[in-house]
Every structure is written in structure tokens, then in C-alpha cells.
Length: 144
Image 1 (cartoon, rainbow, N blue to C red):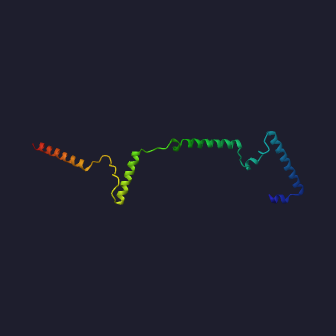
Image 2: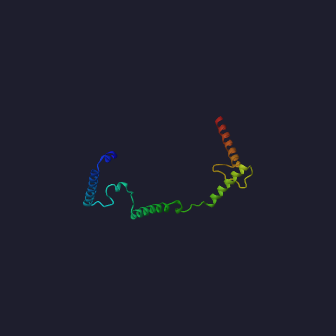
Image 3: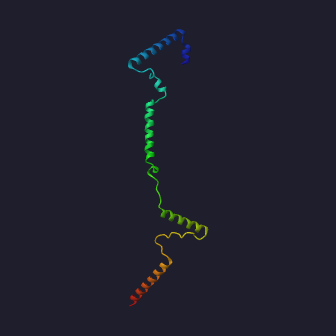
């Protein structure tokens, strides 16, 4: 393109400038007839940065605040704190003390909580003696 401009005479350059001015004035007149605002003329929309109105920003902000209020309002802390009974705390404490005593190799200061389904040695001996009596009676009945 530079080579074409360099080859033009001054008279041709003036004529090209005049044509460009006429085109610009006709374009402005067309934009005015079609109701195109001055800011939204050709090229301005493509190059310009998008902006948001203050009202739109306020709406978005209000919606975000409402979402956060809804989330914070239904959190676990808002529902109330759960508490443990005194018996449950004592049971956990006794079990922990027994574990530490076992690790350290010392006698437990607190009697450990007996797990469900276990028997004392005395009860186990009684049951064993009773079952032996039952088995001997069955063996005697089978031999007859």
C-alpha cells in the first residue's frame, strides 16, 4: 500500500482525502437515520471494554449476600452444640487411662470398662463345671 501512495500525485492525494471525508459524513448521517448512538458507532463496540451499571452490580452483590446468609444460617454451628453425657465421658476417660497404663506398663489407676459379652473368671469356672456335668450325664445315657 505504501508503494501506491508514493506513486500518487498531490492532486490524487487531495481527491482521496476528500472522498474519505465524504464517506465519513455519509456514514454519520446513516447512523443518525438508523438511530445508532454516538458511542456505539462502528468499531467502538468491538474495541471498548464492557462495563456494568451500578444497579446491575448492586443486584449481583445482593444476590451473593443472600446466598452466603442462607449457607451460614443453616450451618452446623447454628443448629446447636451436641453434648456428651457424664457417663459416656467417664467411660471414655477410663478406657483412655487403661490404654495409657498398658503402654507404660503400670497398673491402671481405674478399673477398665469391661467390654460387652465377656465373663469374669469365677463365672467362667461355674459355667465350665456345669457343662462338664451335663456332658458326662449325656455320655452315660448314650452307653446304656
